[in-house]
Image (cartoon, rainbow, N blue to C red; front, side, top):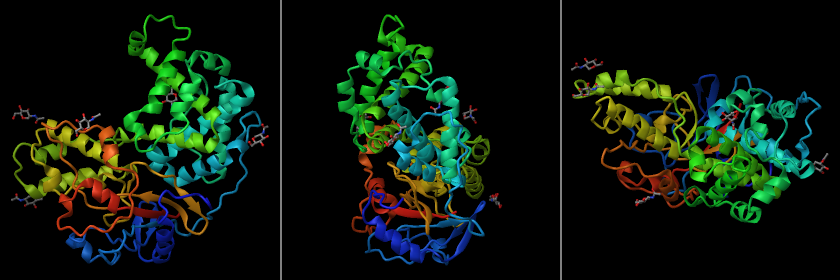
Length: 464
Ligand SMILES: *[C@@H]1O[C@H](CO)[C@@H](O)[C@H](O)[C@H]1NC(C)=O
Ligand SMILES: *[C@@H]1O[C@H](CO)[C@@H](O)[C@H](O)[C@H]1NC(C)=O
Ligand SMILES: *[C@@H]1O[C@H](CO)[C@@H](O)[C@H](O)[C@H]1NC(C)=O
Ligand SMILES: *[C@@H]1O[C@H](CO)[C@@H](O)[C@H](O)[C@H]1NC(C)=O
Ligand SMILES: *[C@@H]1O[C@H](CO)[C@@H](O)[C@H](O)[C@H]1NC(C)=O
């Protein structure tokens, strides 16, 4: 991914520096081997048990944030460059050349063994975006914003093959639950470009969506509203339904609306260049990603038994809680906003089971405890709310940016306080964790989340 601009200019330096520092230590994460965890300047100084850990960094509180970068590598090292020939059907007419840089990005985002862990936040949104853009671009030739059923089969299989030949998982259809039907018009009555443009105010749609503000779109919904409006219009094209409001409430209409939304996204992709289109599509999907906790919560009954009503034995309660949380830590990388959603969701679930004490505080459960853990020491990686793509470097392997590598207490939901909407959260937690001057405040738990996120940028390098 040479020449690919990182979102934070100073990261290149950090990365170069950390690469050198990164080859110390060894610990394991399931089937991966984690090399080193070189320097974490802003990691909580106060956690006593970390002090003795030889893998943990020196701390120099006045320097710019230096990130944690565990390097994941198989043992022995696998070849980094995948250049196998894809087995193509020869039947798909999508122009893969027109989107080749997009495809390379997607292959890295969905890199073999990481794909399941990056699926929700990075890999699958990027895969969906790529597929929409390929169809959008091809519509300039065909005049159609959807593929036919058989054609869709060939093309999806070819997409998977091409990505696989560049290092991506060959299981993407399964991992991302994307099916050939997702490449067709589904139940949307409009797929012809001319028909689309005669039903939709296309200049207004393009004006709203040709550029999407990464930070504000989730809140302002400027492009998303335009998409919804266009999707609603075309979904009603042959419906003869009396009014939009009634129509919207019908379940079959909601799936039709979703299918038409895809048609709209492809139309937008056909009107701007592939890289800009990818930005737009990823930023829009990011709003949905951050809106929901993707983790699967096992039954909380054991925790409720130890921690419910009056806590009889604090040790036993926290033990059951940390055991419970360890199940969550095997699932997936999540964003910091998702971690907040997850903390709230679990908290409500526990409260329903009569756990009334704030056991996040009493058992020291932090936001990063909800993330996939990298390595044996505590080193959860939360992705930024606006996650960047993974990058590939032949010598360093796969890397992506982590945020919030710190022990921020998970907020226990309060019954009286309605959770702030993700719209509000996004606005308060801007994407740019600019390396501001270090925070040397006493108790980190009292420092506002936002400041910590800004400070605690971590950069993580993964090699397989
Ligand atoms: C595919 O796209 C590339 C780059 O945009 C273009 O040069 C080429 O002519 C296209 N091929 C076909 C068959 O349309
Ligand atoms: C694909 O379509 C199915 C319905 O056919 C839908 O449930 C699923 O969410 C879609 N997947 C994607 C990735 O859009
Ligand atoms: C509390 O539970 C722990 C672990 O389950 C146990 O070792 C300890 O004896 C218990 N303490 C009391 C006072 O029951
Ligand atoms: C919660 O407590 C109430 C009253 O103390 C009790 O009636 C209820 O069964 C408890 N619920 C659970 C899930 O333990
Ligand atoms: C955002 O938060 C403010 C107060 O913090 C609240 O008044 C407002 O309704 C929230 N906006 C949304 C869209 O939830």
